[in-house]
Length: 89
Image (cartoon, rainbow, N blue to C red; front, side):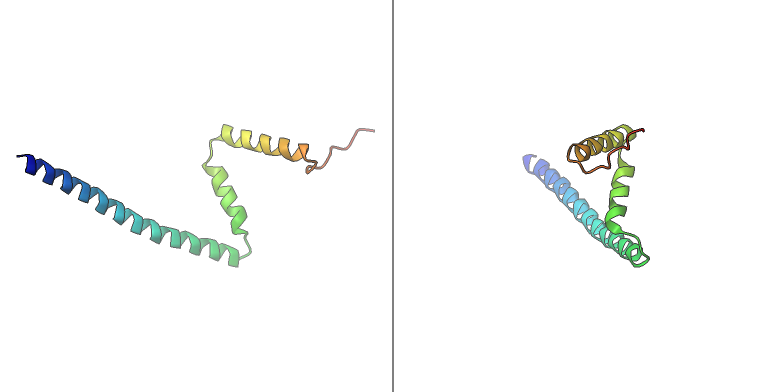
């Protein structure tokens, strides 16, 4: 009986491993497809690096995105990298 339980565990493990391997293969194909789309976009004049940033921002929760933008502006301002507001005359 103990051997039968071991076989079940082996079969389950093998099943998990094979599922992961199939998914990894699919992921490789998808990554190649995504790379192709970025290359196509670049060929038509779009900047893939900026597109990646936009996609990353679109995935974020609105509050998290606003917080990140606020912190970025705060840091850039502290470093003098943002234009200074024009003083009212």
